[in-house]
Length: 592
Image (cartoon, rainbow, N blue to C red; front, side, top):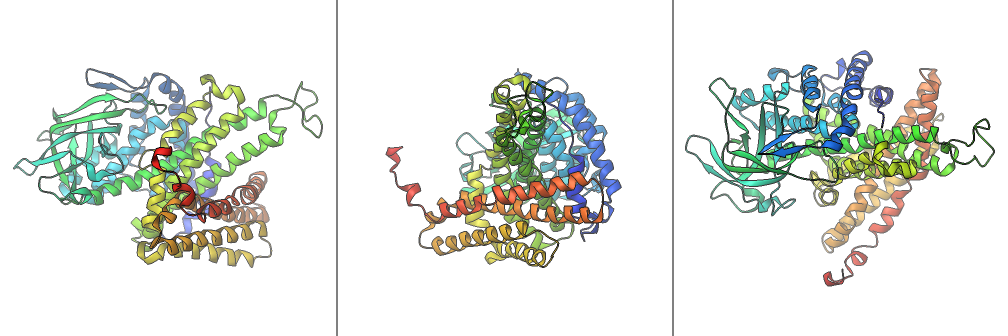
């Protein structure tokens, strides 16, 4: 059975040594002293390890059941959900005006990683509720916010997003769901939505669906979509769940993994819905939810990688196989633990370097969201918008790859269910697909985000790295093994961007054929940027004689590994980009 130990020490390092949250000029961050964040991380870690993790493997084996229109979650989920509600974890960063605790979004992500590592399927119920809360909070009327948000924040009600239909996924302009005005300010919603995570379940007394639909006479395509609040139960005069709305579950999907989360077909048969935001502006409102969900999915990628790596490292320390080439490392034992072998070390170092670097990248992104929203900083908003497809796409691609590496560490034992690592592989796989496939993320990055603001935000990103490299190069006590590789990789990323600019107008396929490589280039540079800064912080702590010396030395060594063994992949991606579209598009469709 797999184990889970919350990475509280590493989260503390990222928050305080790397990001220096207590000194950032972001409203609310002055309250994030070490004692406060440690208390939050310790309590959420206990809940993750003690309550959620023991349900993960059993929840995967049992899954969700569907009978007579009723969906039941795996045994233990309802009790665990009640524990989450009682602890106020669902409203950690929500608006205090509606019952939230008002903490920064950063802390929601830090605690969320632990909940996701412990039980990804379980945590998605509250994760989607948080995204629905954010959407209503951003676009709802005062009356709508008063009506819906308090119970969503408390966890009494949950939330979903209803986008996909049988005939359309990414191309939402093909949506057919109708919204007919009812004459009383409400609408009648009719249509079928599929692949709706947490669409029906037994954890809450109401489910608040956010549904994209088309009002009669609306423009074609995405410009004619509106967003509606469609509750499972209509509210009575006291604001409590009353009669059942015309919303029903038509079935649950049988999936490769992620079994503890109910992925549903949702039928709207003239259901009562309430316009959220303006008519025909549904995509703008829905992107509030989707962008938050994409950050959350990137966090899922890191979280599954983290728990898989933890178990792989433990197995490698215990599993006896062969002898170290330099001589027996454990002569008193019949064989040495496999961690002595260079290829196993390579495997584990790839895992460790991604997990710790990806964690830092994700939390940096979360701090930018806080700067944008709490500090009303438009430049931070533009930068995190640029980084969102990278956070989602790169961290889930590499997160899945890391779970596979962890499975490989186990050898044959990794292929059987008893060890639990194969579940991490299956669960992580969905992260590369939902909330916009990673290919779509790459197209969004190259096709929309690079040119946003006339290229202002990508140039600001390059300037951040350039400035850091210049300042670090002037520090005689810092290691050039971090500065020079980062500088080189950043220049290669800029070279790829220039190639796209040159090709975009006359040969757009050349740019789009390289979009996936560019996303990975930017992901590697971003994680490399994090590692360079973490190494700098760790060396400063070592020089000051602070804390756990072994922890800081390991941080520097892992960072050096990333710069030496992973960051050079940027050059490979650049070479692939500069081949253009010809190798990609050479075959006729009939030749496949």
